[in-house]
Image (cartoon, rainbow, N blue to C red; front, side, top):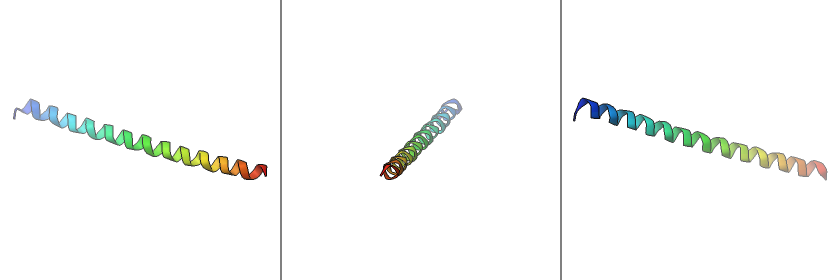
Length: 49
């Protein structure tokens, strides 16, 4: 392989890993917020009664 194509492949792999990390982080933040919203809703329901 040429040196330029090897560099392009390395950059592509690093970019793909960064994209996967971003998706994972976004998913974890979404699930955490959803859990917090459910806890708040449960707290408010219990405090009204």
